[in-house]
Image (cartoon, rainbow, N blue to C red; front, side):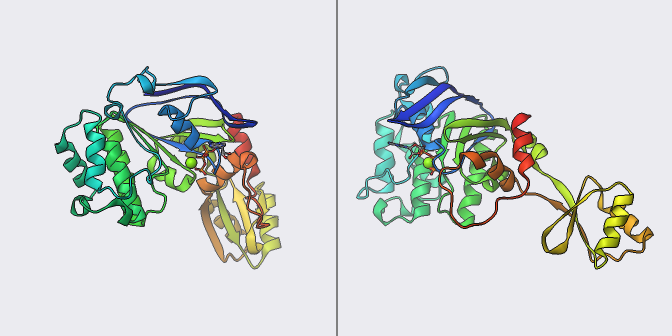
Length: 318
Ligand SMILES: Nc1ncnc2c1ncn2[C@@H]1O[C@H](COP(=O)(O)OP(=O)(O)OP(=O)(O)O)[C@@H](O)[C@H]1O
Ligand SMILES: [Mg+2]
């Protein structure tokens, strides 16, 4: 278990982490989500005692990181996969970590096998691809067989096979009853992996909720309807008390009425339909809405924000 209480970090004027209070629980994967610069890595560094909080507190199973004896056996972390001496082999990198934490050499060979690096174990880390480096970082996190695991953006730069592998690994670690805390700036990735979500923006807590609840509250479903007799269709819908809004390319979007009912209504009124398709809005959009006001680095593409302003709003109130 990881417990944060009013955790705050200031760099001069800049508040990187702002009064965060939440608990990361065992047996599930907790996703730590926020746009670039939200304060995810800073929070993780404070959990590991690599940065000192300006205010507040963070404890690992009730203790501060620097009080843990053989810390790698309590908590394993992948923060920056590049934190490896380039001239050292994968095997030697893991060996010195093991030796400094009272972990037997046998365990080094075990984790190399687990992450699929046995064949290149004696090769120097500087020749490793991004994905291999990421796997080595994960091997280091697993080395002490810790009950708590923390990964900062572990899928960055991985190919689809690597992403699938990490996802499966995190889920199986949680199923073994471990605490798994993983950061990402991609909602789509978290939707497939996390059971619980902690969302931050500009250092502040925006949401602390189960994934199921987040999905339930944020997936707007509607029906997209396309007809060459658009006006006649609008009249028919209107008379039946069904509201439709303009969609893209002349389509109509209908909330809260099943496709069957719309189809029957059209048939009764002799209106021809070219499309009648139930749609599910993406969680990525819901996440963007939730964090919209707290995004630091906007791209100046001129692209409009998604229209579903109300999700983020209703979500925050609820
Ligand atoms: N050592 C530092 N000195 C000054 N400012 C810092 C320092 N470390 C982080 N910051 C600032 O604190 C904020 C949070 O940064 P952090 O790296 O924690 O964000 P993040 O959520 O991990 O972002 P990303 O998704 O890009 O990894 C940023 O505005 C960053 O510029
Ligand atoms: Mg980061």
